[in-house]
Picture 1 (cartoon, rainbow, N blue to C red):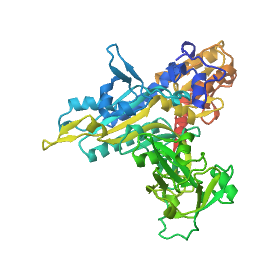
Picture 2: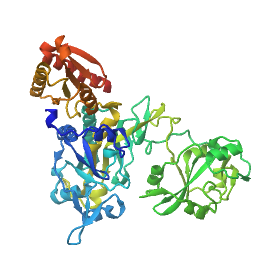
Picture 3: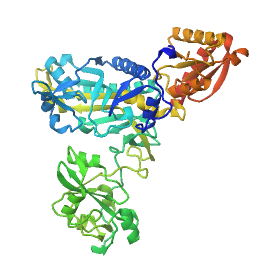
Length: 578
């Protein structure tokens, strides 16, 4: 491909709207342009990368036995009402009406549509299992779309749905997709981890997220240094020592004035105690009902764990006004002792100790010598906090570290949530009607591109893995006005292209500095530099964009030498991922 004929509107300056690295570089490299908040046009370079990602996804999905279909983006409300999600999905579901005043939505996902399809077509166990997928545009009306392709409103997604006869079959389908995802992200040249995750609004019994590891990731992961355990911190189980049957005796509860001390740190400092001696009382609203969650002062209450324990649809922190009405005190002075009319849930770690400090439900006052077993009527005790690096690995007891990641894929075992609600059944070998067992499996295709850049860049621009880069090799003749560099560059480009290697030839009449700068920005993993001075010495120069290493190759056998060098560069990419 000749660069002079390709639309690549690069930018020297970073647009003010761009916040994260991928957003900045996608805009600067002329790969995307914003049309409105959270909605983008993909320009030629961006589309080439998306098509490469999609091709790898298709190959692995097909190899795993899934079949490609294409479902409509506009979905009728009655399907969502059948599943029960029309009322509960939230404002991210963009609802609309047609000229006949019938309700529809723009599909953020397709569980309802595919379940409707299969229930109307599949009758017998002989037709199962089925796994169907699509690569299609989705729309979720994010309240604050940001970070470019990382959290847009419109995005490209691969979503697959499996239907099985029994649990064993569903487990096999889940594992097949898990393995396919592992192959997909490995082939894309990404450093990633599969982590146990919360099922969220999709529902189901268990799930795994596939996370690209990057310092700019939105999610925090708990990863064991000794075994393969990894989980999103929302899901990561906290293992503690067995509860103590007998604890030291504790003096009677005693109020103490703590003027102006609202936070755990302020209270601990005022009383000369460590933060772990303080009970943090967090008031939350679960589906509109107020609950109190108690955790140790140096810990954080985990909203997702609370939500799952209660089986709630929504859980949010209570507003200051709600807190004051419930406790009779401003925020910072809530406590479980004497708190009436509010269910109290205690994190299991607190039951290992006694003689705590907590809020007294009165302004500028706390209570000392609190024993939870003696002084508080708790509704339940459970794992309700977020894991920390101090906690042992739940699987092997080894050391845990917290790392950042970007979710690019998610596999769910749905069970019968949708098949039961929408009556998707089949007749088994005995003629009995049974519910299909489902799974669903998503990959954010456009998000993969952004995550890839977040993981692979430097100050000069993108450093794209060969399977994702719009062009694998960028040929740079330093002066197109001179016959020898221009002719050899064209020869190299034509020979590499004939070999099936995506090659871009910068045939523009630009200064070498401009060509070097734009080549680094565009991030092709390999650069071939053809200059008059080098040819006078019988060499062309090549540059590995990932390592920055330059070397010289013989000009009289340039194509063969470049092909051998390319094999070394590709091997280096594979080694870097090991």
